[in-house]
Length: 438
Image (cartoon, rainbow, N blue to C red):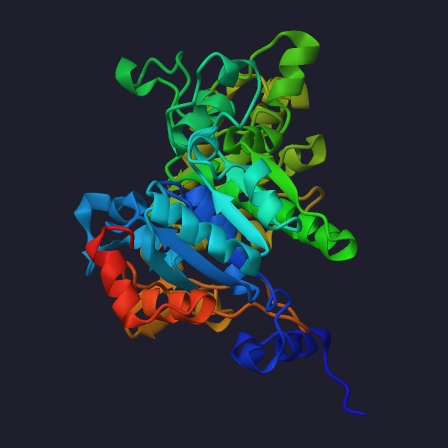
């Protein structure tokens, strides 16, 4: 029997290049994704598509507005950059479910699916006659996942909040408490006043955390449906999903009444545990327990800082964050990032302190590590040409994910899917197109 080092075994048995030769866990699952203007729903179905589910993206005839969400109107052909990624592995068809014929077609497709995902305002599907109570009669084992910032019920929804709005990431970030914690503190008066305000996270964190929670919930519901034959309704609020990962902020307020304010680059629970300036960029440093703080101060030859900020309580006082950093940067600004890493690695004294280089975007994208692990993938797509996309997160020895294609143009799979599921020929599809149904 051949013996491998663990890292060699893991690499050989989770090599994504061999994924096509292995089974996929969700290969018997069909998902109808009716997401509109929300990357929460798109991300949820993307995760299932990677694991082998047949995801059928149902867009209105003019296409999902999410295709237009892209910086500076940069598109690849007809589609924005974010949708190029979240269209991966999905079949794209068009259908206007607000029309009588569109509703009828969706209901005909429903028994052939195990999952339906939608991101419309609360009760929108009910108003169309396509709510959960109606759909479960057509398919009792259906897993129906509705995603909206406010959720599908509760006092705020009853009073009208969210009832006429789609699922917005910026709303989720505000409601989930994150916008208040991101940005420059109000008392950093060295910065202009207009910059010292609550700030949304740069990426669509509400959508992506909400989508991940939706995907996980759908997976568990599918397990239950397989065991019992019973489907269920899933109500996901991306705002609530974000709140669950808002670490200790809510608990501190509940226990003490203290609001954790914005702290810029600093961690309220630990210092040093933040970025500092080097001669050629930024580095991360950590050394927050007492022995480790002493080690950090020893490296920069500043024993006076140990005396001035001797305890964790002293070092996590927000008023001390900037003064401490100014003193540390008197040392770090003299050296390049590479030099600082060497200085930290060469330290052999008591305590543990670490330093890490903060890579610039082009430096990160230049690391061969990510391409070897398929975290970044260059793919030549038949519709969109060569594009660079985020790759597959899960490296699995038995049922790995697969990246088959990145996207499809609007309605590209109408003939394939409608023909396969409902037996429509080109003549019938042409008639439906002329009527604006597909």
